Amino acid sequence: MDDRDARVRRAVLFALDAASFARALIGAQIYVAGIGGRIVETEAYRGDDPASHSFRGRTARNSAMFGAPGDVYVYRIYGLHACFNIVGAAPGEAALVRAIEPLAGLDDMRARRGVEDQRLLCSGPARLAQALGIGLAMNGASVFAAPFAFVPAAQGALVRAGPRIGVTQARETPWRFTLDGSPFLSRRA
DNA sequence: CTATTGATGTTCT
DNA sequence: GAACATCAATAGA
Image 1 (cartoon, rainbow, N blue to C red):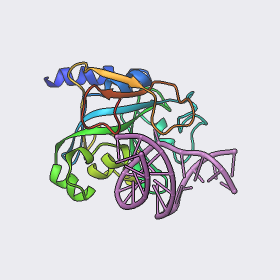
Image 2 (cartoon, protein in one colour):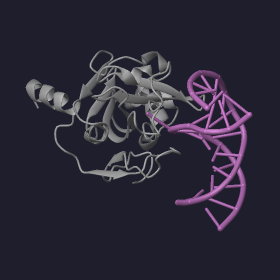
Image 3 (cartoon, rainbow, N blue to C red):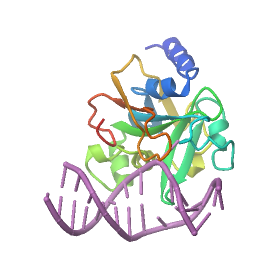
């Protein structure tokens, strides 16, 4: 894929509605300071969605969700962990990145995570944030600027859809997307 | 393999 | 005061 292809794919990707955006992120690559890999699991959230942080409008915590397409939304959950989202085309829309297939910087990931098993490095939203060194300080950054690097998926992957994990509202909405058969998911599809 | 529970603190009602 | 887009450790089947 040359640079023009990448620009076109990026432009198309960041014009999609929230669910299509989250689905199209499967197969894209995300790196932080050269450490990262291929996105294999995402969830879609948007403003008219009761499960979304943006459902009740803009607040101090979720303001990054109302930023530009490609902006980074990081929040703390359960007082302990960071979760990493990429803002979509419209304000209040974002995709939670739930799992990555590690491709680069495995030793750094292992050091940060304190585990050896490759399957446990990035298979969960808080795990991948820790492995890639994504913290609250990166809230409001952009995946198009250093230290991030973002590579859109080159072609449509075989993607499965199902209910989102851990939500109590809109439990049936099938806005969790997984790369079919990947061993790096947070849970089986 | 599944089920349960403790850790921990910010956000919102 | 309750809820929370989770993880790791433990117990049991």
